[in-house]
Image 1 (tube, rainbow, N blue to C red):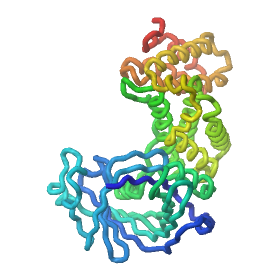
Image 2 (tube, one colour):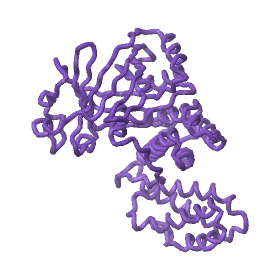
Image 3 (cartoon, one colour):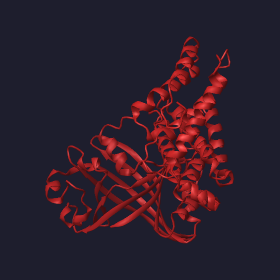
Image 4 (cartoon, rainbow, N blue to C red):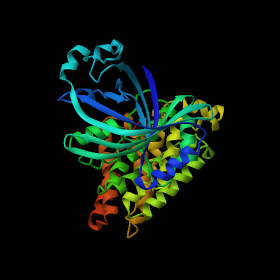
Length: 432
């Protein structure tokens, strides 16, 4: 087994030449393009997919390798997954050669192998560079080809940075300082995930609303911060894929995700110094402004202002960029109870909402929408310790008011304001 750590980008055809020139300018070893043939296998009921596993056979220059990638972690375009590799003499499955400890409960090689058949192919030319950067050795691969699933095909144009040895922050720094440009966007979907989508008809996904953060009962404040930012990033990444495909409503959900990330930083600013997140907040603000001004949604997904903000957020999250700025007292607080923090700040959110909406809005409805959305974003981060049925009436009351204000539903705003104020708090120490 090895731990694969990769940063993936999709490459727009217009920038392939400039990107290749930038890669050739890096000091390191270059390998000319080689043809890679890949066959991905699955059962009729997508059993591997349901276990977050991917099985392929790769062929190059008459040599073959069987690989199983198991459940891991993806943060934005940074993929961290355990993988198992077995050399083969021919392109034929031999699952018994994988180690027994690889299999999750309920799966084994003997019963699984007869159920497997090819589902899709990814065939491409791979050009490689191996560079020393910082304290790391990094392999950079430019893949150009196509994905085939059934009768469907789509082009494949990707850049992958893989950590051979060293530190994950060096991959992120190399990408940011030498490669990031208009025409690159981080790929939240692996080749396998794209192949599965293609095999299923490649229908675009549907927009999703922000959801409440769920954390273990004993979660620390630091776990709350990292969990909340990871959820905002996942929402951003998911809807950016839809944005690039022109799905209605995706741009608004990307905006919600970016606003959520900014509100999380403000919420935790009572412990994390502002200087720790200064660069991140600046880039999120720049992207938010671009998002408000842009009408060409496909172009926006490929712009460097988007990629730079997202890469900075990934870096800050993966490397715990707040830690070097914490005092000893702040470090102690970060290991304290997130539940206690949540209860305290839910009371503050409620007090802010009461102050803002105690009186009829009288024509200033839209002016209060940013404040209301900020309060709701804080509630999404803080309310997960309470049962769904307990928290939802309070959250849904304010959500309904936000929708009415956003849609200028003037006859609904006043009754919804009164209704939202009338719902009793659900958290402890709320004064009820």
